[in-house]
Length: 177
Figure: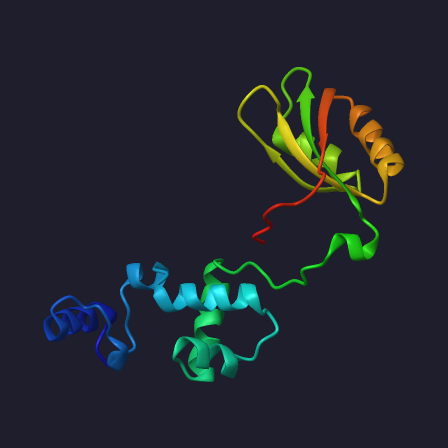
């Protein structure tokens, strides 16, 4: 059996650029990490319908079902696809009040400390450290204004939090999740 280096050289000679060495089962490292047009189509298809079969996906992108599955498995293994989840409608579950909250901390607080503090508040659905004067931007969902106010108080009572500034969402204009 020919070694990997010899196979790569052989492929380079045969194919000039070693773009694909499928016949020998060898790929260059940069090919394995590259996301091509078909991978992007598969990701787009999964974003539209995460419950579709591999046959449906393959038909959409011009692959067989097994080839589509191999592509998805490769995207998962590389971390390009981190998981599969249900997309919910918060209002259907009674979470009708949404707010974005800037969190301002006293002193120096590590992102991990801030994450632990915000993780204790169930209404926090997303939190990011940001540039600018705020230390973090938080998205909160609550059943109503009263519950949102209680959650905001819970955030403000964290030892490192100095103050917060909130804006309540009136209507969502674009949602590209």
